[in-house]
Image (tube, rainbow, N blue to C red):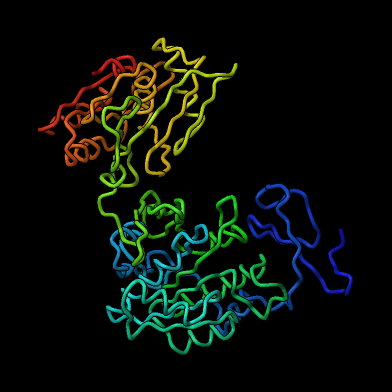
Length: 458
């Protein structure tokens, strides 16, 4: 395949996964070893965004680690405790944050709400949109309620003009919605292409670090759920957040997948309402709302995301199959894990599922793959198979091994205290975890060593 177009203009091939450049197309990327990730883009003028910022009058010199002053990063609250939790305590000055998610899930809404909160506290905020007009943004602002004097709007896609305005105004916080609409004149390719996204992000990153501006950028996602454009975009920014959930449902899960200033295990829970996104400060109660009463196959379990325990309802339905091959379906958890636990029930507990379809669902639409859900899944399947109702005020958690043993899990005290706080009376937990929660009073704890013991509890 030629590396030049019919008009003689040079073209370059980029890996859409890691950003590796090549003068010719290759089936496998030498950088990340992925297959069929190279895309063709027109070559630029040679003046890249990185090259513009590399021209310095003085040469940088290495500095001894002992001579570097350790400064505590200043954090600014977004006005949402759930978002602050995911960010690690708030917005770090000079940081660059990427928010991705499906269309219509609420990325622009939550960022406009954050801008309104920051502007209300005296921060200068610049909201730059390449997809909506000023009137459309004003309509959304009226819907979420109120305006602020220090919140400025700009509808522009030319990165050179945007850079000039940012350098002149020097806002405290800047929002780019979205990075796929930004256009760098130094790169001769269409907006949204691999080279445009990479070079535009590089310019904004240098502005954020050089001027001490906190920058939020919105990224569209592909059908696979990854941010459209090269994966190098995620490597360049400081924080990567993803909105999860069905846009037609009311809940939203904000999950951090990268954070240089905090944990990547935290999640934030929001609910979409007519006035915008509202944070859910008690997600356990929210996830258990509408739970059926006196129904077999329903068990409450406790998962932990970062430092937050979440009570979830696991539902199982076991029905006789009408085909030769029984079906196994898992929604909200790992399909292969459900198959493994079904095999453990057959081998270690004598529950014959070979002629039964098995469906497992985590109610509320949230997705969890923590091993502590194993005991709840096995108890739910056994409950539906035997058509025996699990007590309504019972919580079960623990990891299940292939021998049918129930293994210890982490943060067991937080899990038990969360169950007690929401009024549950009984906790089924691994026997190996009993030592760490003997001091907890006011709730009955049943330690188990095997799955067989757990499914016999009534």
